[in-house]
Length: 496
Image (cartoon, rainbow, N blue to C red; front, side):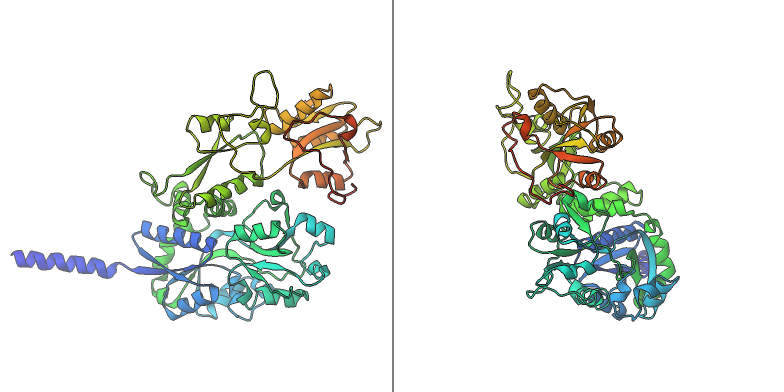
């Protein structure tokens, strides 16, 4: 009797093992593909499947493994079919069923659309593009001596939509040293912003390029196809395709472009592992269960004031911290007193403007620094601009109603302090965009604002001839110690 029960138990266990399918998921060596692979693997595990990730190099190598049966599934983009030498143009792929037919010709089935796109873009520094009169990819031909280009890993080897195909289509010349291959998106962007390259190829996840002082060039010849995130199903998994589609259904169409942008920032700037970042998203979508107690690496908490619109500088700060402490992810804490959070142990690092750092003391507006923290690094700079309504008359740029930025923000406090030293008081406090609208409509005559060295919103208002730049120098303003008197170089702004 005992033997019969043991035999029955063994048979049940063997039957269960026989039914359990192990899916091999290919993972390309690029952050967005790693995130997609983590999301796919976790979704499969949720439905009782087993998923093992298999590293592969680029789309061509990974697809070779997929077609050979060495992997079963591969997160990819619909436009990758061009890179595989399918012979189909971007125009053909845009036709109904074009992408499906392209992959089918390679023996690959097209799985679910994950819900977002990640197109390739050619980007430049905004000031560099403006100086050279470059708006389209074709305009890069204006650069003398060839184009210094930074590209992702494997991009130069893509036959249909890669670097050399791009150069041929637009009739461009590369610099003699050839392209710089930089796998990490953030490092590629950093090289561009430092001026080490003229242009860079990036996948676009909806980043605010203007906040970084960058701009995407128009693909006026329609070179790039659409890049919808999807899952490729190889021949080895075709027999289980219906079961697979049911298992992947919770992920289908659920990931927005903004989700991927946040995940990329979590990994590249904030130091989160792709597995943990992807799992957090699946939990918020209700696809996976809670994360459980704790995480492997406790985060470094970075405090900042939500009233200060620091734009890209907050991400640059997070990346700086992440590089200094590579084993710790970075988590933002929004609090009105970042240095107070530092002093009480709620945060380990605070991101503050110089105005906040030096605005501490008895009976003095500036001069003594806040001793609750030590300065560790300078992340960036902002400028104080005096703007005047384009149609306003009179020699005094501060005559009439003057606006400053929102109450409580660093920008608003700095502008108010400067005005007070000139015996002026602000008439209106509002966000920068609203101040420009008030200037354009004539409801105020001037505005004293703080923004990045090349703010897009001010540049656009100047181009529309709504405002003009004025100098503070004739007013003899007494500037706080952390502000330096600077002449804005000619050509920084249109009509300057």
